[in-house]
Structures are given as C-alpha cells and as structure tokens.
Length: 72
Image (cartoon, rainbow, N blue to C red; front, side, top):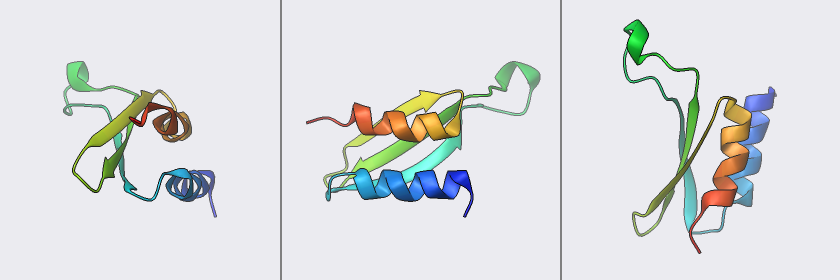
C-alpha cells in the first residue's frame, strides 16, 4: 500500500460517521500555464449535503488538514 492510499484510508476512518471522504483533487483550473497549480484540495461531504475542504501543496497534508476543518 502506498502512502497516499494509507492516508486516504486513515482520513476516512477518522471522519465522523456522517461524513464521507469525497475526493482529492489538484487545484489547477486548466491546462494553460496561468491555470496550473501544484496545490491539492481534499473534500468531505456530510450526509445532509454540507461539504468541507482543505488545501495544501502536499496531498497528504491536505487530507490531514481536512480533519481540522470539519464544522461542529
């Protein structure tokens, strides 16, 4: 298992029961040089449709930071 897979599994396991890890996406908005970005966005969705996200230059940090951004 690679580090990213392990981090995904650990993040999902640490989320409260009503939350689901929805994705890990590059923050680029397109392929042109002015649209490219090295950042990562981790997103979780709650059963009522509320979402939370965290960004970082490192995908593992984005997943870790997501746990800190969940609304109470």
